Every structure is written in structure tokens, then in C-alpha cells.
Image 1 (tube, rainbow, N blue to C red):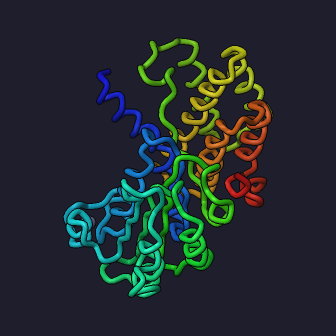
Image 2 (cartoon, helix red, strand yellow):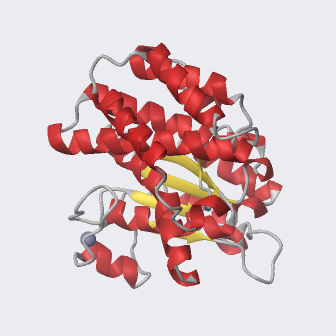
Length: 312
Ligand SMILES: [Zn+2]
């Protein structure tokens, strides 16, 4: 794979989990509110945010993440003149995003800027979308103004902050956002490894397990744990194996949903797995994560409250 193709594949693969999550939120009518995307620059969370915004604003989207590209909203979005879209970022010659971008300049305080404009009713689309890039560089002053908006965003608003790490966000901001991590591919995933017959066989048996209605959590946990531990002592190798297992599960649930529609149990299992995959990099005990994940797959009610994602 040449360099450019590798980067493209990396972007798509890294975004698959994000795409799943937003399709799910959209199906459940929970797209509104405030989101925090974090990831290194090459994970291209910014590109995903813009794609999502365009699809949300599109008047005839093909699916929740796929704008039609032809309607008036799409045309104006591409021209940079959509009245329901706000985007702010740090100018190159500044160390923070200027306060004016949020609340207007001195002559128009609270009558301009993102915090004011997001309150207005949508003019062309059904919602308003605001993207705040370079969220690592919010001044305290700007963050304070933004907090009020994040506390009570209007129902029509979707606000997305994009930064490089959770640690660089103010806790007050972080606690008001739904977190979504973006990651670049690990070195081992950059080129496609030669097919390993043992791995193929294991994943084949996994697929039938995930597809069955009566999922035996304890048994599944035991199998997955020994597969993951057989990768060796190194944590990255173990995590890569676990990620592979969870991606297989996601593939099974997506396929089943295409075949049978929005079945509640499938949606729950998909949501649980999407949440769990984000915990792989969180330095948890891998065996404990596998136990929790498989228990929730067996009985999704365990996951209803408190949700994994809300304790992240
Ligand atoms: Zn469109």
C-alpha cells in the first residue's frame, strides 16, 4: 500500500467506529447536544465532524452520515454559506481562539458569535451545527462563555468540540460533552498481515456466537480471554487482538441490522460493543474488560445504567 492509500485507509478505518456511534445516536433520536472528539491530528476527527455536520444539515441525506451533495443545504454548505452552520478555530497567529468568535466583537457583544447564533432557529435545515476546532486552545474566558451554551443547548443544536486529548480540555467542558475518541492505526494494522488460518477459524466461530440469540457470556469471555492472552505478554498485541474481536462483533451486528432492521437487542449489543472498544486504550485490565463486555452482551439490561460511556 502506498503512503497516501495507507493514510486514506487509516482514516476510513478509524472513522468506522465513530460512524457507527452516530448512526446509532441518530436512529435513537439522540443526536442533539454536545460532543467532544479527541484524537491525534492524523486521526482526522475534524474531517469526520465536518462530514457529520454536512449530513445532518442535508435536506435529503442518503443515510445519517451521508449527505446527498445536491440539495440547497449541501450546495450552500460546500460554498461556506450555510446559515445553520458555525465553525470556529484558532487563527494561526494566535495562541487561543479569540473570544469574539464566541460572543461577537466589542461592538456586538452577545449579538454575534457562535454562542448567540446557535440559539437562533434553524433557517434552512432542521438543525444548527457548530464545530469548534482546536478545542485544546480555548481561553478560560472563552470557555466560560461557552459553558453556558453547553449547559443548556437548544434542542435543535449539535455542538462538536475537536481536540487532541481529553487531558487538554477543561474538566467543566469535558463533563458536559459526550466523548468520542479517534485513533490512528497502530503500526501492526498499517499493512494487511498475511491471513493466519488460526485467526480466520477463530473469527469464524466468533461470528456464529455473536449472531446467536442466546449468547453465553461466561463461555465467550473465556474463549476471548485465552485468544487475547495467546498474543503474548505485550499489551499492544493483546489490545490489537481484542480490538479485532470487537470489530468482528460490530460487523456481525451491523450486518444483522441491515437484514432485520432496527431490532432493539441488536442495537443494544452494537452500542455496548462500540462503547467497549473505546475502553481498550484506557489501560484497563483486559480480562476485566472482556468479562464486563460479554456480560453486557448476554444481558444488555446491565448496561442500561450507568452506561459505560458516561463514566468515561
Ligand atoms: Zn443534501
